[in-house]
Length: 150
Image (cartoon, rainbow, N blue to C red; front, side, top):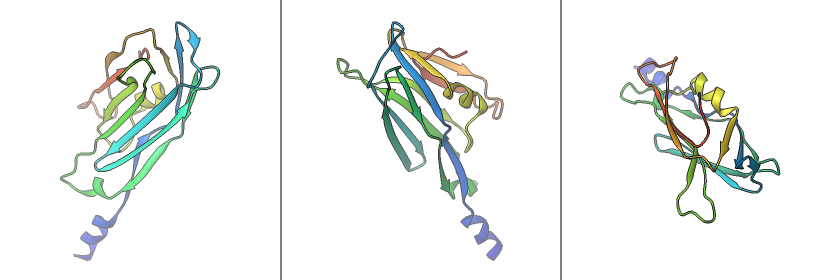
């Protein structure tokens, strides 16, 4: 019985979001001082932060991970919601630079690749992409994004 209790107490590192680098422009012109918000959710854990774009329209978020016992529960399905967005002063709704759900406690490599270089132009329309998830093929990544993904 003590062995089972040890398993229940084990904590796992849940990667909510890797490091993010992005750039926002309008018709190719960088947008300075735009508030970019990041919201990350895992089970009942929520984390949010924000930053302002610099003179070149660039923004950055550090990697974010948490410790959790939930992945050790056989009834728990790990899902991490990642949202990076902004709201323009003349719009009522937020615009998603990036929004997806990852179905694992580790961020898929394809997400890490795109999150290193999120280049968005607000003149474009948001798109919905379905990307292959090599690490978990049963869970393709559905991403709503303003940036162009390949």
